[in-house]
Image 1: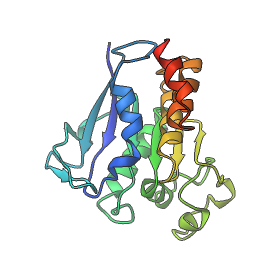
Image 2: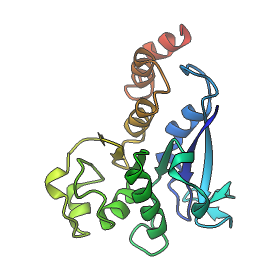
Image 3: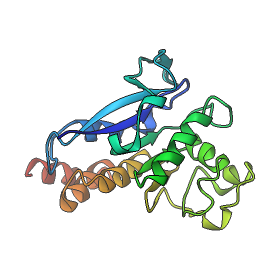
Length: 203
């Protein structure tokens, strides 16, 4: 049975921040269980959105139609709308997912939106900088970790400058690859070491 990984889409969606993750979730190459996952986009409505890169995306489904029990993960890319009412429904959906024990992954501005919603107050997390989150007045400053990406229970957070580390945490949490394959994958994409490519080709 195929499990769905939901990717939230909204105007100013930061294309590059989730590219490594969703491409390697959706592409079955090197997977432990090819065909286990499929990626689906979810918008606040079914109206098209425009990404930061200028791409037009028509959401596959609307936010109020997805339930945690029907999802493997909710992924939230960075954006320019995170401190506004436009992002609030996505933060509330993240709250619903976390309460149900379904993982949420947020990067860049999306971490700011989750901080505003109080979702980083009791979990270790990271973001673009500690000062960025301090500016929203949240209560989780003592749990900030100066790392490219951090996983605490069902929440993954990452800096805008760490899309590969973000992807590694997501792929690990979803158990997409065998650990040795994930190590080779990160060797290639994270360390830009061509040895990782040859290791992957031998899988």
